[in-house]
Picture 1 (tube, each protein chain N blue to C red):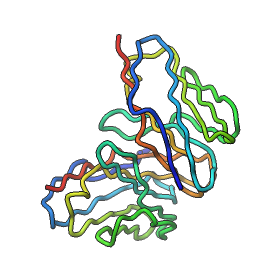
Picture 2 (cartoon, rainbow over the protein chains, first blue to last red):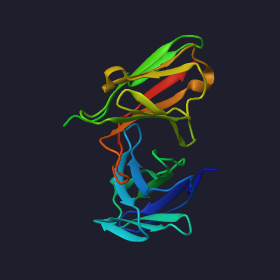
Picture 3 (cartoon, rainbow over the protein chains, first blue to last red):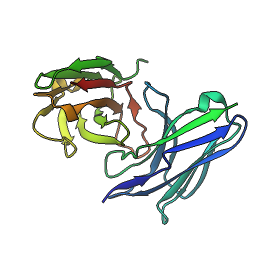
Picture 4 (cartoon, one colour):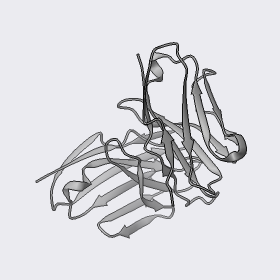
Length: 108
Length: 115
């Protein structure tokens, strides 16, 4: 079967670091994407991992462990504009599979 | 470069009516996907076009949903007749090629409310 698990909601303070975890089970695996979605807007691409390890891109980093079916998104130096939903999306044979996402609220 | 555009942004219809959603992918993107998000739940895959052909329609809920992509450019998703449980946000996404690392570009979605 296919299953994506992420925390439903998280809160953090401006300037802090937050880690959003994701565990997944998919039929076939061709990498894992993270998307950010602000309310009422289109999901936008953040990162892609296909090999185990950490990919760093500015304030955002993403980690993957294929053997554990586990990924996390690390957000550093949080800003108010980072308040959004974060979607973990492993890629199956030819499509992305999404969970319900994690709603992150950043407060002053 | 224009992004993925969807029309309308919102639609409110009564149960039993018909609604047609439209998606214009990024020019040159052969792959077009439809997804749906029912409130509070995950974004669920509906179907995938490669050019004008349906590659995978395993996520289509039932035969009240009809998707087309004539000419391999824009796509339409028709719901006929609409039911209450069809309410949600319908997202369209496109990508250029088949590479595993090719990201999807999403539209802003159509918020469908069936009353």
